[in-house]
Length: 87
Image 1 (tube, helix red, strand yellow):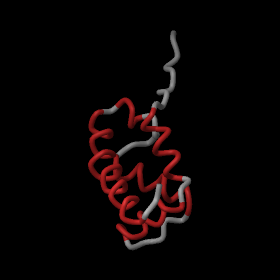
Image 2 (cartoon, one colour):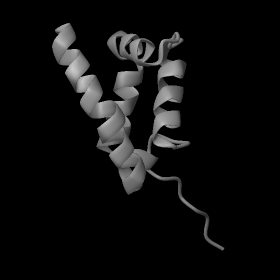
Image 3 (cartoon, helix red, strand yellow):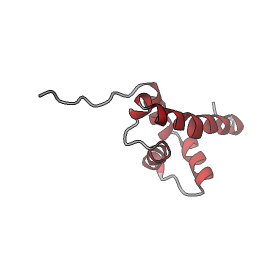
Image 4 (tube, helix red, strand yellow):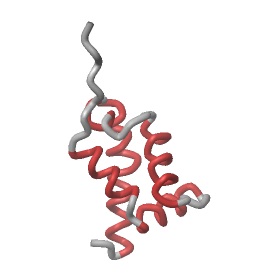
C-alpha cells in the first residue's frame, strides 16, 4: 500500500509564509479585522481562515483557495503596502 505524500508548497505558500513573518502584514490584519494579530501565528491563522485552508501548500494546489488568497489578501495587502510606503 502506498503512502500519501504531503502536498508541497510552491510560490504562494512561500509568499504566505514570508508575509506571516512581516510586521506590516500583522499591522494590516489588525486594521482590517479590528483585532490584534498576535504575531506570525495570528497572521497564519488569518490566512488559513480567509482562504479556508489547513496548510499553506493548499494555496498552490487548490484553485478556490488561490482565488480567495489573490482577491481577499494579495491584492488588498499590495494596496496597503503601496499606501504605507512598504517596499
